[in-house]
Structure formats: C-alpha cells, structure tokens
Image (cartoon, rainbow, N blue to C red):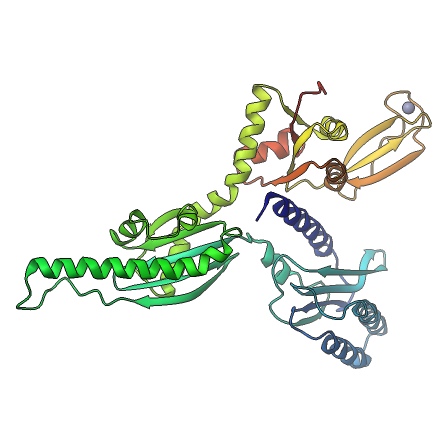
Length: 414
Ligand SMILES: [Zn+2]
C-alpha cells in the first residue's frame, strides 16, 4: 500500500467512524429503525424484493406510529436502492428510521455507507429500536493483513490474519525420517539424508508461503512465524523465504501445533508484537515531531497555527489524532476578522463578539476540526496521517496539542 492509499484509507475510516458514532446515539420510540447489510455478491433486485416484502408485512404492526415509521424507513431505503445496479466492491449498508429527538419528537435519518473497510459478510435485515452497528464496528477493530507460517520438521501450515479473522490456506507434511535410524544404515549417511530431507521440506514451506504472500507483499503489514525451537530459527536463519517476505517478519514465536490450531496459537502469542507493529508508523511520526519541536523547530501544533501553516503550504505532513471529537466554530465579524471557538462535537458555542475588534459576530460556520484541516491539506498537496492515542506520544498529541500538529517543510515563524 502506498502512503497515499494509506492516507485515503485513514480518511475514509475516519468518515465511517464519525457516521457510526452518530448512529450509535440514535434510538427509535418503537422498533422502527431499519438496518440492511448488503454483501458485494448480492443482486440489488433481491434486496429490493426483500424491502418490499417487509413493507407489506409492516401492515401487521399494531402501533400506528411504529407502522408508519417502519414504512417510511423502508420507502427511503427503496428509493436509495434505485441508484445502484450492483453493490460496490465491499457491499452496502443502509440505515433508516425516525429517531427520537426528545419531547415526543422524531426526525427521519437515512445513511447509506458504500464500500465499508471490509466486505459485508452476509445479508442482514434488522428492525429494532436501535441500529445494528456491530458488523460494521467489527470491521474497524484493526484491519491489518498479516501472513502466518507455523512449522516443525513434519508439518507446516500457512495462512492469513485479516483483521481479527484467521484463515488457514495451505498445509504440507514432510517425509523427514525420525531421529531413530534403521539397522544397517550408517550413522553418517542417515544423518546426511535426514538433513537433506529437512532442507527440502523448508524449501517447500518457503515456496508455499512465497506463493501466498508475494502477490500481496505491498498490502502485507507483517509476517509471523511460529514453531518449536530450533525449527523456526533454522527456517528463518536459512534464508528460505523470498527476501521481501523475510523483511516483513515481525517476530518468531514458540508454538506447539503446526496445523490450523497452530495459527491460532501463533496469533495469540504474537498479540503484543502485533499491537506494536500497528503503532510503529505512528510512533515514528510522533518521534519526528518531538525531535523537530526540540531541535530545528520544523513543527507546528494546535488548530490555529497548524491551519495557518497549512494555508501557507509549509506543512509537509499533517498529524491528526484519531480521537479528536471537536467542532470548530468560525465566527466572522462585519470587519471580516475570524474568531475560532472549539466545542465538543455538536455542542453549542458561547462566543458573541470578535476577539480582535469587539464587534458582534454576524456569521458563524461550524465544521468538524478534522474535515476542515483535511480539506485545506488536500488543496495544498499535504499528506495527512492519523495518529492513534494508544501510546504515550499519541496520547500527548491528543491532550497536550489539541490533537493537531504538523511537520514543516520550512520554518514560517507561526
Ligand atoms: Zn472584528
């Protein structure tokens, strides 16, 4: 994956998370919120049939309000389905329904999510007092791709770790003779034949792994190797793997099984290494940020300074905390001065006068801090990186620097 694709994926992931968080807060006054998950291989016409079927069955709903609301939700989804000939690559998810806005009021909400980060696994129709979000949420719990190899001298299995899913792909067994030689064979000859057989098996395992991993080497976040000692060490030290795959090995682990269950054992043992690997890139960015901050000063932080630097085009990399949940209110006075105010997402602001001239504010725009900055970054060709707050410096970015920072191409004195 190139850096650019990575940033786009991060951005998309952020937009999805935002919608998810909004949907999470919604409740229906009755069982009237409809969620539909459409897998990529499903015919849109089948989805339409299902929706119309539900529409006719809705006449059995006793409460008049709920009945009307369910019908409205289904009609809204039916109307959206007209825009699709086929589901996109990763499928579609629809949410629609009248959500409770308090005081006996409801508001109709409809969201269509195209191409979630991982393919929708199966068709789901769900009508309840809240939206069905779990299948989407599961797609976000680390979406990495790791190659898995477990081996001893007798058996090997290769497979994938995709997000949280483990898939065994291929298995091989060897003809390596046991340590006990048969009568009549010289000890030396037996030993040599045994080493040759082991070498041959390692080559076979490496071929199996290369065949699977090499075509995906650019998307691969790492490779884990497991087995008893000294097998896995011999295998890795012997340079059997394709060099680009060998470079991706993030650790070797003691594992006692070498079939499918060995893959599960391997992932469990590698938990710490996996979370480190995921944070590695983020850590490198934050290390560079702190180094610049204390050295050459090619760094900026906080919303306003970073924004100014972005507009000047001096920001090389925009660093945004994944956990910012802040809106910026951009107040403008009649003189055209801008006053910024930060509020929790969706909350009201308090600023009424311009901080420069004291005039009353006559215009206010609300924007998500992240959307606002990314839009400027995209216009200026600045790379954007999302930083996790699951490590110390990532948490500092969020709490001490307002979740916003930048690495600069040159110093601007802002
Ligand atoms: Zn003013």
